[in-house]
Length: 271
Ligand SMILES: C[S@@+](CC[C@H](N)C(=O)[O-])C[C@H]1O[C@@H](n2cnc3c(N)ncnc32)[C@H](O)[C@@H]1O
Image 1 (cartoon, rainbow, N blue to C red):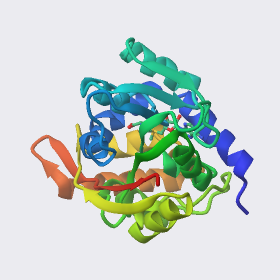
Image 2: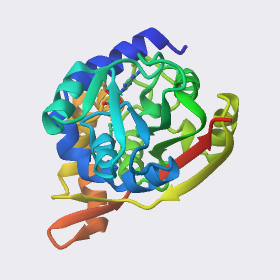
Image 3: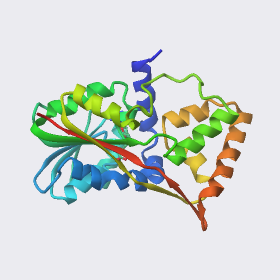
Image 4: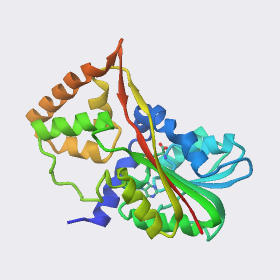
């Protein structure tokens, strides 16, 4: 059964411990969606923007470089500290995407890069994004495409399915790939009150230093996938690691590894 409180706590304690690891593993990858995301939210000089689930603050920083006036919100104090350290000129505030600590109608644009798939109540967060926008304001979010296309997830989940157990006990949250389905994005954006929803795919490529990196990054720099790996028996985990390394050889380019990791970018307008 879905355990919303337990899941939120699990996500929160996970993110609190990994700002540096997340940056090292995913910083250059999730950054590849930022410009399309800011375009979808119509961020220009002077636009008032909220970056929701801002993590280390990459999107907020890019919005500020466009001349936008931006604030970042994240529920992890450690992430907020990291974002503030990287971007001393930008305001970051601790707060929950499902209950934003900001008033109604304050923003022209709201963006959430790879945040919604970590929330216990994503529909509530969509409604909150809508609430803080002015009429005519734009909202955009990104998630990972399905594991058949995001090769890094496909390889890891495939190796766990083959050598381990995909159903280890973890606080159950909403499906990780729920918003990888464009129709679901459209339905959910409409449900939260947005109009003219649009969904596109953004090609992204994950450059990994070696065939060891995917297993290490998934173990050390994620929350839900790391929990899944931690829950495996030790002999299974060894086989999973070997299978992942083996599979990655197909994606080797010289000394490095290149994995397609496309994003789904959904956006809509507040009426
Ligand atoms: C995958 S990271 C994305 C970070 C960043 N947006 C990026 O572009 O890389 C997910 C972020 O969502 C934050 N987060 C998860 N649940 C949240 C919630 N309920 N409210 C606010 N932030 C949340 C985490 O602390 C983490 O910083």
